[in-house]
Length: 205
Image (cartoon, rainbow, N blue to C red):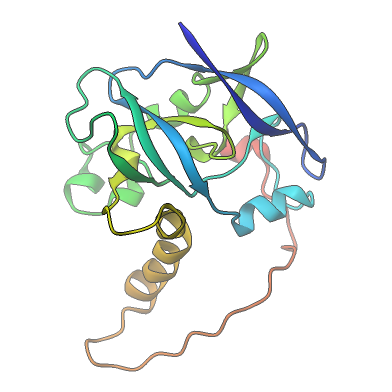
């Protein structure tokens, strides 16, 4: 059984978005169906929009979002229907050496990328899910590990920001700069710009 919802679809980098009906698979074991409440626009999405970041297309953009659980697949015990959650594009398996050493961003299980090719269709054609999320749609099918509980007193809009931009900034501070407790740091924002080289779609497939 498939689930139909509306989504914004870019046919190629640099092309306008179109609102189309897309088909999602029912959540499989370890997966969750989420009704999108809020989604943020990230720098990588803007780079795709101007043709400076290559990704298999057509697709459905958006990788930082929040929403409400609509259904869960088999073996999912961490969330239940009607739970509020933040959707993160950093999926982890929970079983490899990296995950077991609290370095989930470096997980080695390749099955997450494989599932991104199987969850979404546009008519008769399968399309690649964007970074495992594809949030610019009414519904998302994501790994249960990618869903973080959202407190009742936090808005969906704030939750969507937490799923990418805040965590990216914090990871830069804690994992790269590694300041000592009590030290002072300066954060200097830089404008979005086109990178000198393009990321190939082959690298991301």
